[in-house]
Amino acid sequence: MQLIRQMRNKGLVLFVFVSLILVSILFSPALKAARVKGLRLFEEFYMLRQVFGLIGAKYVEEDKVDKEKLLYGAIDGAIKTLEDPFTRFMKPEAFDDMQTEASGEFGGLGILISTKDDILTVIAPIEGTPAYRVGVQAGDRIITVDEKPTKGMSVNDAVKILRGVVGSKVDLGIYRTGERKLIDITITRAIIKVSSVKARMIDENIGYAHLSGFIQTTAQDLEKEISKFEKEHDLKGLVLDVRNNPGGLLDSAVEVSRIFLGKSKIVSIKSRQGNEITYSSFAQEHKKFSIVVLINRGSASASEIVAGAIRDNGRGILLGEKSFGKGSVQTVLPLPNKSAIALTTAYYYTPSGVCIHKKGIKPHIPVSLPRLSTEEIIELRTEREKALTDTKKKGFMKVSRFDTQLSSAVDILKSSDIFFKNVINKEKGTAIAKDPSAVKGKDKAVH
Image (cartoon, rainbow, N blue to C red; front, side, top):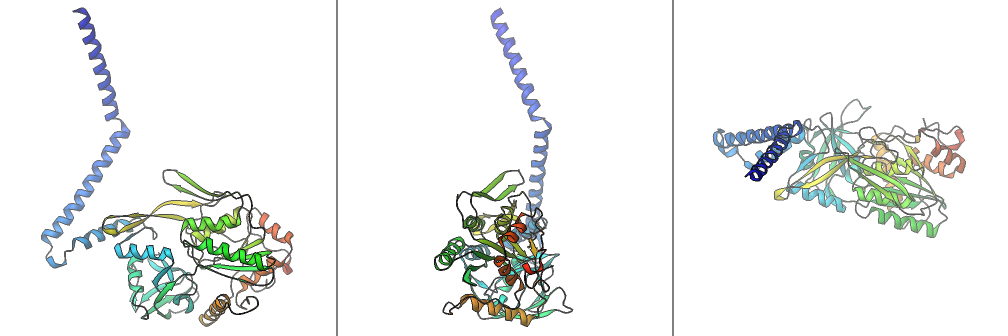
């Protein structure tokens, strides 16, 4: 009997001990906070369900009650509270369009847009598209579309309006910094076929490659063009032009960077949980020629990854204007009924650990284009397009008299190796040539 009592007492002690542990866990501050948070979330969703029910049961115009529109409107409203123009909800047709764009062909005007101060703003026109040919520029504010104000319009709604039947026209009222009145531009819609790489030799030793976007085939196409340069010429320098390149696929930007970098860090991605993913180049060898990267305020996202990797690894010189500053990562998360949400889930960091989101990347050498009229912009772009697409034309690519950025890049590649290395080795990367003769046209462009 005594043994049984002892066992019972031990069992009672164990039961009390376990109970105390469970109570301490259940009522711990962390778990209590999580439980309260969960209850609040349940209450919020219950309230949303109540609102949907009340609208469905009592709204005076029953025919206007559309469950799908209510749902989409609620999702759009939730996303707007984040005040992030890059997080967006995509209805099934918009999600399908986005997947088509990533493969390199889609319909529309040829511009990438975002919102800034609640106004539709052009991130960049895509080279060779209708918008590019009529002179649309990075930073243009779209104030009206077909005379209708755009203030407060979401990017998705704007895209829906801007896209239309191929061959139809759309009228844009654009505000451009420095202009006293709105610029009226009419654009004819077309199928946009993005050839992401266009390349030519400028002379026997200097190549030129323009990347208009980062799609699935960009790195492969660029590698092919560079190999052709090396096979047919004594390639000593390359101008890599990512001006007005709004970005694209992260993997494409990493693969393009690997073409130029040996064993180096390319970019890191950090989420709010502190998780870090690093993309690197593992090659022991890389292309030996000098590189000048042209950037401007239309260079965004994937363009900034490449520019940042080349800069931070001391592989080349950045020339032009400060880039756009889009350093966030959007994860596309499919939802039921073939819709999706592009959600900002992380920021990316250059190899030196700098997050350039909303800041942009400064060039080593600031060079601006001269102030051009719309007519001169169109002339410049027409010349460039002819020079890059006329494969039958013999000889080397001619640099436009308006393109002071490209001419300055060529002059740098022709300058001494000492000057080139000195610029790269500057710690803060804001060097300007001390010798005015090192960059021709300095009086026009370099400041």
